[in-house]
Length: 315
Image 1 (cartoon, rainbow, N blue to C red):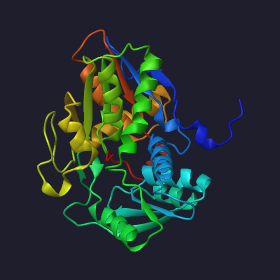
Image 2 (cartoon, one colour):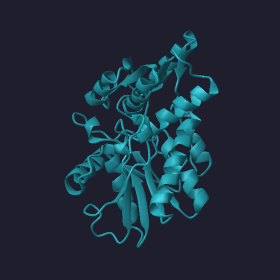
Image 3 (spheres, rainbow, N blue to C red):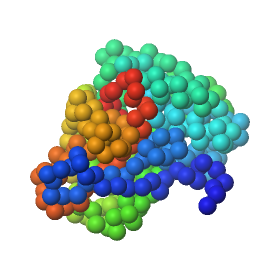
Image 4 (cartoon, rainbow, N blue to C red):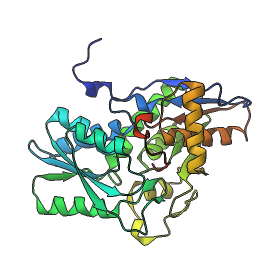
C-alpha cells in the first residue's frame, strides 16, 4: 500500500508483549509502541488533531504561524505536521536541565524556530504532575498570539483535541487486545493521553484499572480524586481528568528507576524507546507484582534518540 503522505502513518501503532523484563510475573504486560509514529513520539497524534480541528473551526488559516510551549516532543510533532501543511512554527522552550540537545536539533531541522525562554529558578529541573513547568514559555505564546492576528497558539496543555486524539488510541488498544485488558498504565504528562484513553476504556468496562505514572521530581504529587494544591498550576486537562475520577491509582517513579528500566528495554527487549517508556513499564511491572493472571497495557511514548545526551524522566 502506498500512502499519500507521512501524515497517514500517524497512529495505528503496533503492540508487543514484554517477555524478559517481566520475568517472574504471572500477569501479561503489553506495550504499545508509540515511538514508531513518524516523528518518533505519540505527540504526532495530538499535533495532527489540534491543527486539523483548528483548521475546521477557522482558527488556523493559510499563512498563519503556529506557536506552543514545548521542551521537545510536541514541538517536534507540530513541526512535522506543519511542514507538510505549509505553516511556520515557533516553539518557546523553557530553559532547564531537562532540555536535550537532540530534541532542539530535531525541531530546528524540521524548520521550527526555537526560542529559549528563561525559567524561574524555583521551577527549573522540576515538574508538575508529569509535565515540566513551562509557565514563562506559555506566557510568551500568549503574548505572541495577542500581538499578532496571524498567530495560533496550539495550547497542548488545555486543548480538548489533545484528549480527542487519544480516544482513538484507546479504541486501538481495545481492538488490539480484543477487549482483554484489566489495567492501563501511562504517565500523566499533560493529561491528554491518559484521559483520552481512560475515557474509552472505562466506557467499555468500568472495572478496568487506570494507573497514572508521575516523576518523583514533581513539584506536587497528585493522588486519585485529588487536585493541584498550587493556584498557579490549576486548570487544564489534568484537572479535568482528576475531577472525572478517571485515575484509580498513581505510581511515582524516580529518574534512576526510569533510566535503569529504559536501558533494560533496549538491551533485553530490543525496544529503542525513551525514558518515560521505562517509567511506564516499571510502573506496570510494580502493579503486575500485586495481581495475578491479569493483562496490563502500557505505552512507550517516544524514541531513545531524544535522550542520547540527557536522561531524565520528565514527561
